[in-house]
Amino acid sequence: MKAFLYSNCQFYTFDSSFRLLAFSFQLKKVISRFIMAHQIPEDGTQLPLMEEFYTIQGEGFHTGKAAYFIRLGGCDVGCHWCDVKESWDAELHALTPADQIIENASKHPSKAVVVTGGEPLIYNLDYLTAGLQGKGIKTFIETSGAYPLSGHWDWICLSPKKFKSPTKNVAEHADELKVIIFNKSDFAFAEENAKLVPTGCKLYLQPEWSKSKEMTPLIVDYVMNNPQWEISLQTHKYLNIP
Ligand code: SF4
Figure 1 (cartoon, rainbow, N blue to C red):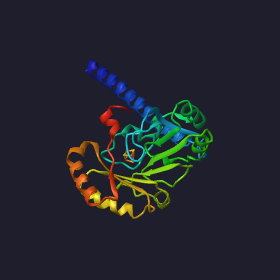
Figure 2: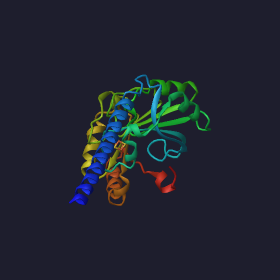
Figure 3: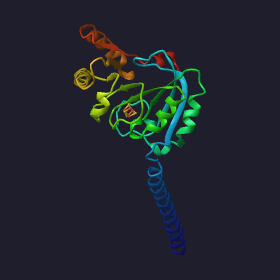
């Protein structure tokens, strides 16, 4: 009986400590989330940078051109086929001074930058893009358009998603509309979005990578029958580059 009580008491102590530890861990997570969520300055002088790298643009109008990619963390659009889900939680990505990002971008031979995500327009991009353009760098953005437009852009690629509609002001300024084709209903979605962009905006249909075998033949037929559209392929994946 004594041994039983003792072992129960030990168990109780262990269980309580474990719960306390788990609680304090959860509390720390909540507090750090709260603090970090409020550390991102509204003037865009610091941004949650997931990665930056020099490569070849693989998709859309600028395919084949060298560019410096700036991938910002944070996205709440929630595409189930997203291939950068690790970008979704902004708090996992270090707040980085925009000046440092500009400096890094300016060290590369190509004077073109692609700002992507995540969803980069969650943040105020005025400061970053003014700084890049001040160094003679062309600024391109890849956005779902789910947030209001900020920044100074040489090229806006709108890639709208069914899960969160694009804002009017992004659609009105788009130079390129790139719709990802995951299933047949995406053709109708593409046509709906084509009505929102200006005349002369480039129109692209791009097969979602995992459905590319199934969707590419449909896209080929669609483009031949509707030549205002063009095909965009994720050529960087064929080239095995980032
Ligand atoms: S908008 Fe882009 S980053 Fe966000 S979930 Fe969709 S594909 Fe992923």
